[in-house]
Length: 584
Ligand SMILES: [Zn+2]
Image (cartoon, rainbow, N blue to C red; front, top):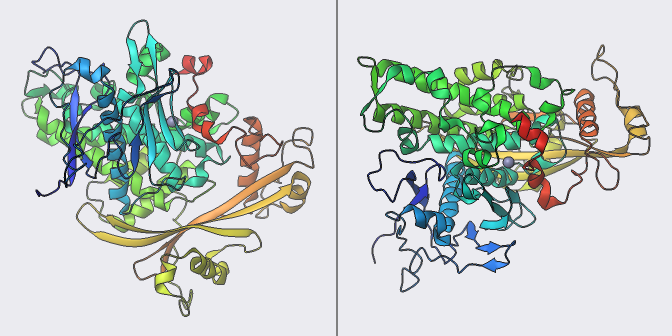
């Protein structure tokens, strides 16, 4: 038997069917394609692998396609001999053949999951407990696509547009990567879709866009195809500047989708790169900035603008006679994208599990890079700090480093192996060291995850850690909260909720706190990021936001759930309101 491949090279549509390959000499193949490396595993018809299961069910037409067979099912190597039968297919096949649609979503979703597992150094679980996520490439006749945890699925819609004909969201690389990221982030940070601070819902959206953009930018072919004249080996240097490149299609999310719906005057769904630095988003009285996608754009703008500055700066030394080699320019762009993608994924482990704000993300990047890439040779961390600063986001003081303790904490009587794997043992550790960790044990505390992580820095530097998340919860009436919540420090403004006409005294409220503790490779605590439950000014901000957004649940309570059926939470985020369309 021949040796099994580690990766399957799979043909996908590089961007979406509207982005063409101007260098193509075959008239049947104008759509720009890319071949991506997908982590290999046995493929049953579907395709169905260990983490994804493509189902050709169309709920609008009530039809079920025959499962696509991408690998022969005969003999000892049944399911292993994947062959890319779309490498030479014409465009008509890519647009029409359900088997290609299945391959396209499978390949992009599996590659996206691969990015996370490589950056975090461990398998990444789905939030719903089973190993396989359903991918439904033609789920319904609707201009939408979403992650549904109830259905354990990513559902991709399709629709007809007068100008562009049939639009299939499963053929847009950015939409598939965006939805896959929602599912992955939901598994890593389950609490981020509880009713939280305004940045939390925005982060889900912004982070999904960010991974989608960096995923596209990390493929050299995608960049090269849109740089300058494809017939020329060199590109004019004055076109490869921040201002020359920012208008490029490379930075547009939902290009074909948005154009077909005539959103934003024919310029795709979102172009966060065009968001000039501002702190206006902090003003929640402006409803525009309370909307999750819009708020998420601040994160995308801060990172992607930094990316473009870093990329174009790397090009300056390779300018010759006013031009730059196209291949080199694309290579530099892809390298910078891969580096940033790793950084933003690694930071997730260093974020608090609840009560998240954008400043926590920047703080997490700084802390995790300090561990894995202390030299920061190319100045990525400083550049990102600068990028976030231009939007009014600063590192939150010093990260919550636990200083080398004098006699504390004590590891005597703790099992090193259990501390790295067992939530009860970790709970006992937190319990015994509550004061040292600054945790108030009066509030209910629950350890949610104990996960190993192995990170590799850019120069092969390996850091092993154990990541522990815990949450604290408090359920009480509004009247009781008014009595409990006193200003944290003397001189702080008093705790004030909206009037009792808006939140009656008997209203049940749910408050959260919690944190992430990182244990080093010897089992010792080295870092903690946490959100006190009794930070009343933060609780006040959160409750005010939930009231302003009308996020009451069906029982008239506040802070328990988002008041929509579980499976529809992300669908709501993607709902196209006519007002938003105007804004975007
Ligand atoms: Zn989304």
